[in-house]
Image 1 (cartoon, helix red, strand yellow):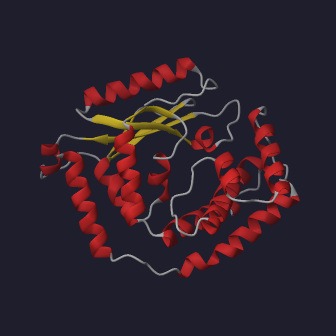
Image 2 (cartoon, rainbow, N blue to C red):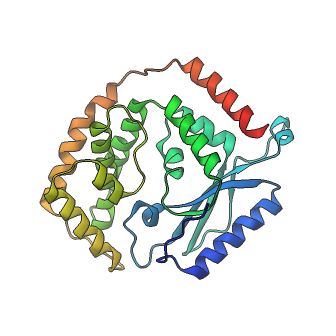
Length: 261
């Protein structure tokens, strides 16, 4: 599958495609999932946003039996436009089993450079089976706090707002643990007040046409919303695991073996 919006620079997309092909050849791997992450996939890009391609790669079965395993990260030279790197499937599975939301988000990106839908769906199903809501909630709560600790800018505020709305999404979807990746979908699916939705949409629109939003402040209504959602999510800090860790590890092992068979 391939989902590339017309807003992406076709020259840049072609170079990302070239880099991905080169990685498969140079490292003898296959890449069943390659997506865009960062502000473009999160739904609030600026005109000068770089491209953050992330991918999952799989080695031949025999390579996983090597006494001296290869690196579990592959990347290409980083510059002002391109940030292309990926993780080995084994790394991704272990991270998901630990409740790493970043690895799960890659599976829900709205921008797909190349992908095997069945591979993606299998990983999402695996995540749904093993992930702890408490771990995901803590992830987004800690991301929001970490961003709040930095120098206040409108750009940084987006990195607080998205996890805050992800926390709201978890609150209104009590039986699910894998929120959408992009901010517009989170807004749509989180039953936020219309005033919050409109203020966030206006801020997204402003960022889309401004190369640098500067150090101005976000609307008071959004600051209040963020504070309320983070306070309501404090319970994730003490949430106890609901799944048996040993059973999760065994399930992860079986799933990994099925992927490389």
